[in-house]
Image (cartoon, rainbow, N blue to C red; front, side, top):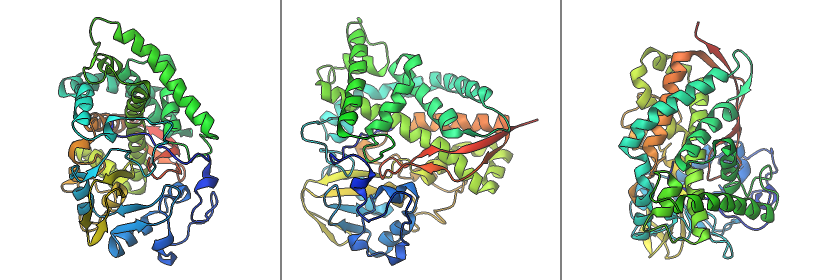
Length: 434
C-alpha cells in the first residue's frame, strides 16, 4: 500500500486534450536528440504509452537536470531528474510542500479530495499514524501465510502452455485480494476496487474515462459504497483492525468530511493496487529481457529479496511525485520561486548513471539497491513498502517453486499515464516444472 494519491486533470476528457506535442495515439514519438527540450512536454500520455521517455530523461539529467516546462495542460512546472536533487526535494518538506497535491495536476476547485499524503505536518503525521499499524511487523507476519495461500490458489487456476494475460489473471487479482483484506471489503465485489483505482488515475485515458461526469460519478459511487461500510464499522464498539474501522474510530480521522474520506480512500486504493500490481508485471517483463538474471535467481533463491528491490527500482511504478515550493530556493543553479510546482521524476532518478552502474539493466545483485527512489524518502515515504516487498517476495518464491518458464509472448501494453507507470496487458505462457 504505497503512500500515493489520485490525480485531477483538465475538464476535457480523453487523450485529445493532452496531445501537447502533436503526437496522435500510436503515432511516432520523435527521437529525444531531435527535440527542443524547451518546448517539449514530458507528461504527454503517448510518450508513456510507448515507453519513449528514457531518452528525454537522459538529456534532462545531462543538459538541464532542473528543467522548466513553461507551457503544459497542467500549467508550468519544474522537472527534477537526478537522484541527488530528488533526494534534496523529497527530504526538505519544510521548503517543498505536499499541500495542494502530489501530481502535476491541480485538483478541481469544486471537487477537492484532501488526503494525508497531500498534507503537511502535523495533520499528515496524525492521519498517517492512524492507519500505519495495519502494515506493522505483527500484521505482516500474519499476512504472509494468507498471501502465499492466495498466490498458490491463483497459480493453480492458470492454464499451462496456453496464452493468458498476466496483468489480469495474476497482478490485478493478487493485489485486489490484498486490498479487500485490508479494507475488510466484500470479497465478491473486490474488482470494484480495481475499477475505482483505474478511474481515479485515468482521466487522460479515453479507454477508461470518457467524460468529467463519468469520472466524478464513479468516484461518488465509490464514496457511497464505502460510506455504507463506514456506518457499519463506526457503530461497532471498537475497531476491527481494518482500514475503514481505523479511520472511523481514529481520533484524527473520525470527523473527516465526505470528500476527505473519499480522498484518503483513493490514496489507499491506488497505493495498494497500482504500485504493487505493476511491479508484479514489470518483474516478469524484466526477467524475460534479462534471462541470465532469471537463471541466477533459479540457481540461488536467497537472491529473491535483492531481486525484489531491483525490480521495484527498475519498474518505478509511480513515475513522479510533486511538491510546491513554500519559498524561493536555488537548486542546481536554477531559481525556484515560491508557489512553483516541482516534479520529482523518480523514474529518472532510478536510472541516474551517477548513482547506478548500467541503470537500464536489471541486475538482481546490485549493491545498495534498497536506496532506490520508488518508495520516496522523508515523511512521505511509502507507508506500505514492507507489505509491497512481502507480496513480491512471496510471488517470486512461488514462481520459482512451480514454473520452469514464464514466456512473455510480446511487448506489454502500457498505460498512457505519466503518474502511474504501469501495464494494461501482457500475454504470457507458463511451463510448469516436471
